[in-house]
Image (cartoon, rainbow, N blue to C red; front, side, top):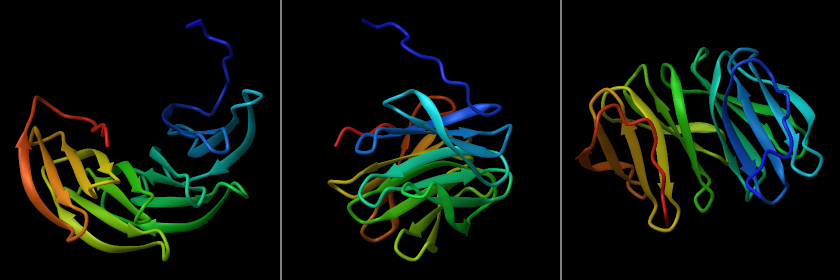
Length: 189
């Protein structure tokens, strides 16, 4: 019907949202209240509020292991949340001002774009540790992953380009010039 069927009040300054289609839960990063709202897609109500780091902005769900990854731009880390218990189970230190985040569920690798340090942190989802940090363009903001090809794409807002990364070798294999201030990358695998 293309009509609003519900309005759910969340924390202050909602910025990023992600859906887990398997559990029908929606996760919202609230930058102003430093927390994550968990919404039931069945009842359209808040079922949990999880404290995150300072200024959470990016959020992604790994549907394979039901873990949620949140970039906290004010504390330069990533919160790892269990979707089963709705609790933070690990905090991973990354670069300065992390923003965009994406996961490759096939490899269980998480990619956090660090806007303030012009790099990309690659996190191993099994150990919750940074395995490699890759230099990309200026002010990386968004990340996209193709799980079929293991290609990783980083939108560099300050240099108006996309860094293309081979996820197998963790190397930048190309840089593609795009329009002004790219913010995000969407992938059609």
